[in-house]
Length: 157
Image (cartoon, rainbow, N blue to C red; front, side, top):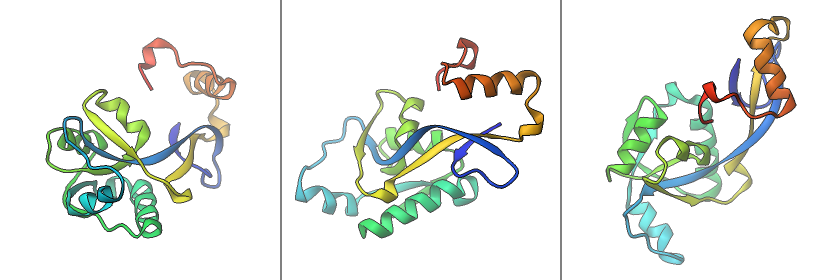
């Protein structure tokens, strides 16, 4: 089973349990200007990005939003996973455009600034090969389809 953007590729069955959207992550203790000054402040900041090869879907989503918002972030560093991106932001090494859901990886250590626009939001869901709905996968598919909370041993999600 994969948890990814929708629609699912051919040959997979999908169930769309949620949506996500982009936000700009900044260090928790950073003073951020408001109003008209925010955009010029962001343009002056260095950004940390997830390497495109590690997250091509997210990279495409960020590019689409940046293009629609006429925003060109100055990428100063790239990382191989979203948790490292967020840790570098938390450490004060830059800002990042990330999914809102990623805040759960470092709770209380970041501020997320919402971004607007239809390009900033997308559906996410679980996808799997229907012919393999047996055993543990079959049980997980039933949970996802029913919208039940995950059992505690799956941890926070």
